[in-house]
Length: 441
Image (cartoon, rainbow, N blue to C red):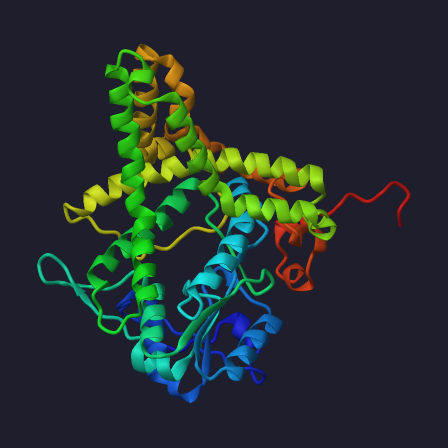
């Protein structure tokens, strides 16, 4: 279906814009891309993939395309993606942490993955000839023989491209593209569960012929991203019961060994962010970009607490969802709400009561048996116990606007104010505008 939208009319005669909406959305987003490849792909050398909520400048696209042209064996070139300035409190703090963690993490992964790099499905350039020839996704079968299309298509397309002899690389620089992130915890969980189901499909693809060892390892890592969640929740539940039944917490685990293990876990958990924090604090230009050392340090502390609360909430959600997959539950490719909106108590309770029950239950058992163990349990039980107020408070539009004004989750784009982002009219950039000085004209 071809439709000329009102925004497309502005480009009539200057750029050929085709909008299409398939009557049957077979294979979801991957099916859209395959449909383009089959209809028009052979007319082009490259394609740039964008999501509805992602953004790239012309300079960034030209830079990636030139790199592709310079290396004819490069099949996919992925740019590092950062969050667009947002007026959602949840998105602001999440994106601040994402900004700290993803850069150092991606630099490290680009080093060890080399030409078996990642593809995240958007803000990337594809070489169409090998993509069309080698990257068509297999169709899986359900328990009753019905077709099951792959949800997390991007990583499979990347490993198929590498198996065909073409390189897949990532350029870990922060000026190559932006994306919007979910504005609330509930929207974030919806997206996360779709990724969870998609990554669990990789079990059946590990034996695909011709994959490089690094590619198979990447698929395993993608699975482990979610398999680790039941392990954490199992540790909380079984550990709570074991401590409750012990004479003292020390009879369950040695204090010295437990403390050392806990410290190692925290260092591994926060290592990518710590690397970026140190880098920013040592560079005057980067410090100014985040609003100065004081604001940057305060935001790092806020984001650390935010992450400690958010992660176990997601672990509970993954655990429940993966258990339901065993009984045939599935989640389709659902649309996402990107506009700021409040989360009422009834909606938060409906979605997060299991999280609250698990977190509060573990803390109540320890309070009745060995209260001294509660500070340690809070690292896993605290987030689920506070899931409902956490979801509501971080979704309040007024609170998000306040965060943008005072600089909570401040990103460099809110200070440097790139012309390309100013053209988008983002409210977060306007709210971050410094107040005029008295007497200034």
